[in-house]
Image (cartoon, rainbow, N blue to C red; front, side, top):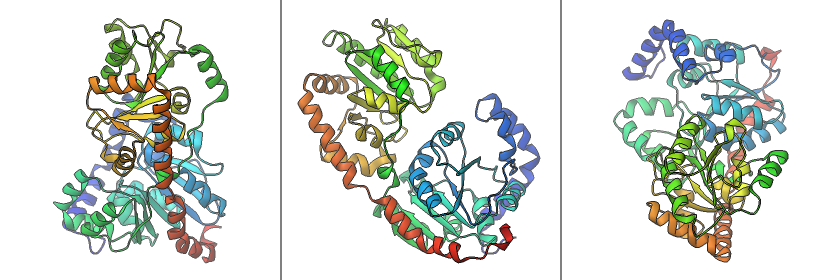
Length: 434
């Protein structure tokens, strides 16, 4: 048994060990839900067909797409410094993103199921020299076993939501035991740093949010040209990373605006592409013409709603839409990332629920670089005003870009904080990796 663990973590380790035989049943269920890739199930058990690269290995773990996106520039810089990088994440969408965006040489694997057997198998194979956990995906067995094996642990781009903070405060010994195993906690802001301090993290540095330094999402030039040709000179409004309920607002807004803006096209890119067919049905129920990108359809002159239910193509949409509603913000999800569309020149509308990006939205709203809308009436009024007044829209875009630029610098501060750990790896003998 690991020393210094509270009873809750001892119990967790025992329960996850006892649950190991049920892992295949869980994986079978997830396969049926489309949450796993059949050919890569072995990775969930700590097995891999990929050999560990020689020399020092930096392991980076993030839960899903947002976390992975935020650390891709950091992974590139670590790789440029001569270190091999292993990246783990937990979702199919993040695996697809890794395939598209990870730098050459970086390895992606699905994160293992957090049971002692699978975790030890993972460490026996990969033997990482430094572990970087992104934001808040804290798996107890992974963390405790890393510490037991003497692997330095650093939490990067760390954040604690208000909901998580309240939950963790009910079990202070548990979260304290996990956070004390981190050699360093790099927080997104002073507010997050204070929460980590109250939860028991002993070594904290505020480095800023890595998401502000992420470059614009790419767009396939041929696909962009094809879509531009199909749209022509039509007026475009988009909803990005939308959640249930938000698509209905966008569809109703389109219905209200189309008489004032003939040829109006609304593009909707749901956060979960499998919801595309349902959004198509919503549009048809509103007596609007709709097309589905996953079926290979392009918007025709008659298309009102174009459902972009594909992965990795937000870069296309942000280059085509002068106004973007960023989803997850009217739904109780906490808001999706506004930084990418702003960098690509879109004027941003969002709902009130934006705690996932509270710092960004507070700065944007204060500088009039984005605007909050609470319902379909406000959305229709603001979108209509911006469509009529290109100068006002351009002022919003300029203010948004300036706000995001002012919040940048987190990548360099994070690299500076990591440098002592990377220096140790450079000096460390690696005969065990031969």
